[in-house]
Image (cartoon, rainbow, N blue to C red):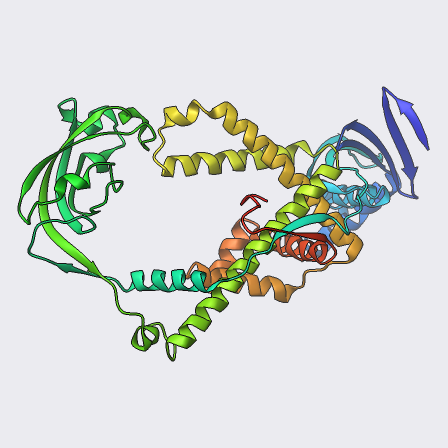
Length: 458
C-alpha cells in the first residue's frame, strides 16, 4: 500500500521472511528499510554454527568432535560475521527484486539491529536509474549529406601517398622558398632567453638539428623567409614578432631574436605516379591502387556519415526525454571529463594558470556533457531492453582482439588491463549502444542534404 510520510511516498511489502519499506529521498535516490524475521536469523546462526563445529580444530578434540558450547565460545565473533555476511546481501537482493528497483552503483548500508534471537534490521540508501517513458524512437528525423567519392578525392589521396614516399636530398646551393633546412638556433626575448618569459617554451629557446620548411607560416610566421639565400654553414640573425594567436600566450605581441646556424639545405622530391609506385604499396598496378584507394575513401565516408547520423539520433532522443539523473554517476562522469580536458590542454602547452582561468567554463561544459552521456546511456539501455538487443561473448572477444592489435599488445595482457578497470563492462556498453543506434538508423526518417551543409558535430 502507499501512504504519505514526511512528504514522501512509502511503499511497504512483505513476504514470509522479509519486510521491506521503500522511501523516496530524492529523484533517483531511495531508502530501503529491511527487516528479516528473528526465526530466519536464528536458523542461519544454527546452520553456520554447525558448519564451524564440523571443521573446528580445538586442543584435545579431533576435528569436528569439539563440544558445541566450546565452538560457540571460541568462534562466536566469526560465526556472527558469517551469518551477517550471508543474511545482508540475500535480504537486500530480495528487497530489490521485490520492488523491481534498477540499482545504480553500490548501496550505502547502515546496520540498525543484528543479534541472535532478534530480527535483523538495516537501512540501505541506493541510487536508481531515472524514471522516464521512452519516446517514439523509430522514425526519428536525421540528415545525411549527399556526398560521394570523386576522381579528385582519389587523386588527392594518391598525392598523400606520394608525400609518404618523398625523399629529402642534400643540395649545395642557396636556400630557396619551399626548400627544407636543418638548423641550430637559440632565441631571446628582451635580451634574455625565451624561457625567462615563457618557462614552458624550451623548444622555442634552443634547438639543434631542427628541420624547417621554408614557407612563410611555418614555425613562427616570418621566420623561414629570412633564411632564403643562405648557404650551408651560414649564420643569420632572424627577428620575428609572435602573433596574437600564438600557442604560448606569454609571448603574444613580443619580439623574438634568433641566432641561426644553417646546418644543411635539402630539396624535396616525390616519385612519379606509375605502376612501380603502385607496387611499392602492394598493388598489382596503378589501376588497382586507385581502386583500393577509392574503396578506402568510400569506407571512410560511410563511417563519417554513420557517425553523423548516430550523433543526430542521440541528440534527438535527448531532446525528447526530460528526467532526473543519478547524482553519483553525473559527478563521476563530470570529474572524468574535466580530467580529460585538462590533460588535453596541458599537452597543447597551456599553463596551469591559463587552465585555471577557464575553470568555470570547463566545469560548465563538462557538467552538461556528463549529463548528456549519462542520459544517453540509460536511453540506449531501455531501447536495447525493449528491442531485445543482446551482446554475446564472441562480439566482446572480437573487440578485445581488435584493441590488442590497435595498441600492439598481446591479447592476454590486454585482457588483464581490462579486468583491472572493469573494461569489459565498458566494451559491452559500447557494442550494445552501437547496435541500438544501427537499429534506430535503419528506421530513421532520412533527409538528403547537400554535401558540406552539416557541421562536423552533427
